[in-house]
Length: 117
Image (cartoon, rainbow, N blue to C red; front, side, top):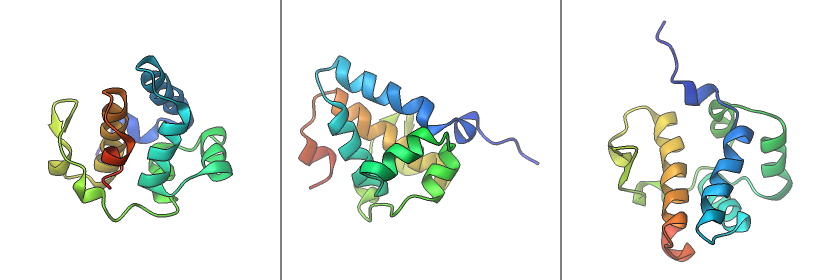
């Protein structure tokens, strides 16, 4: 059996503070990171906090997401040297979508633009 990429089994709660830290270093806020996560996955408020606190891995985080935003196809560009729109594995693609949105936030893009409005 093929070994899963390590990121699939990492807990979402262990990576979440890194997303927030990356954003805050660039003058953005935890609330903006939460807004991005809510837009992408439908997790917000107490549901998001439960996902962070419960230690679920990325695989579970995305499989149990309230709803994946229907506009995810509008997320394009390169993360970690790979074009997100060309990633074959659906879970890896979702993880990279989230990485890409947080990168855009940290680079100073307007939230409306990040949320593909």
